[in-house]
Length: 129
Image (cartoon, rainbow, N blue to C red; front, side):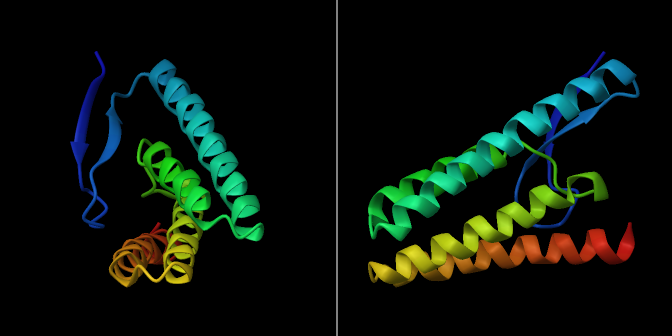
């Protein structure tokens, strides 16, 4: 029986969904969901990039914030999900830049901090896994 838990095993301060089951089918389902959520997050990031290039900062922010919500559904604390952690870093870095363009400095600081949390996770993945 699969049990979903919200926990912070990677130490980043966020809750991530983790599947706890040795069943191979559940692992396959998890990877399918991971890939689906990763691709959706990446698509939203790319849409935000286009809006940013057109100086449509408010809509770019909306796309990026949707990407964050989708990406929060993935577990990024093992080597297989390194690309997910890298995408989080890019999304938060760009969100900081977008908020800087519209002079919302409190949001710049918040998103910079969030991005740095994922830099921490990447360092853990690269050097400890």
